[in-house]
Length: 100
Image (tube, rainbow, N blue to C red):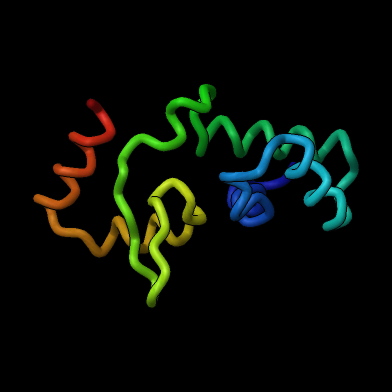
């Protein structure tokens, strides 16, 4: 059985992909179709909301050089790095924005 960490690593950056595209990307990495579907489903349950309306909740932008990305458009690792760097007050503001 594969560890969750490996699934997260395989599915890194799939936030803005649809299911079919994500499964194809996993299959190009040498994973069988049935396993690719299972891995994607596990990953999706942990990192994405089931409704598309909830994918763009915060309106928080991350500056990367001259580029600006929505927090939800960043990969999991980018989000983690960004959120770990924030202080308590900033985290409270983001949480309040998500809960509105």
